[in-house]
Image (cartoon, rainbow, N blue to C red; front, side, top):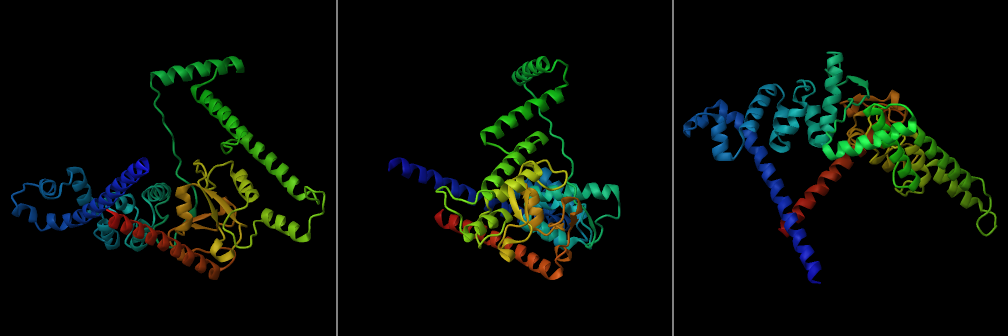
Length: 378
């Protein structure tokens, strides 16, 4: 009992710390939103401060870096009032991600994205749009603009300390002996990672990440499907009833009787199609969410399941991806979720947007209730 009480005390201390951190952030955002007015009206001079940075540090505890960033951002947002207002609630760093891409015409739309999307998802959207604007100055300059979905290419750089270098070079030497040829560092690392992934898949602890592993997954899918569909008798040798066969067929087709749980066969098929990677074009992140392209709240089935990483799952639920039910090469990126269209017509899409807005509102309310509970507990 004493140990349990001790754990609860630690939990309460952590909750209190989280609440205070969020309160501090909220206050900091409001302080930053006031800075441009204090600077423009010269209020800082009335309090014997030589610079606005000195004033912000003395009376608000703000760093010189964040002060300069806020004032520079304010200049860029003079004709974008909706994004300017977001600084007080979402913070300067989040707004800065999208400020240089937004135009007066897209101000309201980008402000909504800043409010609804997490910082990592917003950063990914910013990178993708910046790349498109570099290629074509006319791309994404108005609210109706649509472009193909292509994640911004990322490169991963890892620095090896002396011990890691020693271990890697030893493994590389063994691989070269086995292959009978010299290998570059890049090729050696690829072979090491591929071998580890195959071993993980064999033990059932990971998802496939290469073409070779796709074959393994597809083989398992074929074996599973044949085991489920072919036999017409149960384990006792009795014939399946028509109702039982219908239930098996529903599991394989993705249809359900209202359960949100995705059947295992449907999950395997979806993951095998992308090799365990996010389905968004050019994204190399592992799958974290299985997304219903045909919203479950509307259809109550699992016919259109798309594997996504956390970031591109946010893209989908913020109405950024058009033509979700089509092959990924036909997906389009659009800021205006109300302008989204698909093969099932505008009416269904309007419902889908409404469902997504309800989903985001529910998430926001849930977070608010959680914070309120923590405040009462604290």
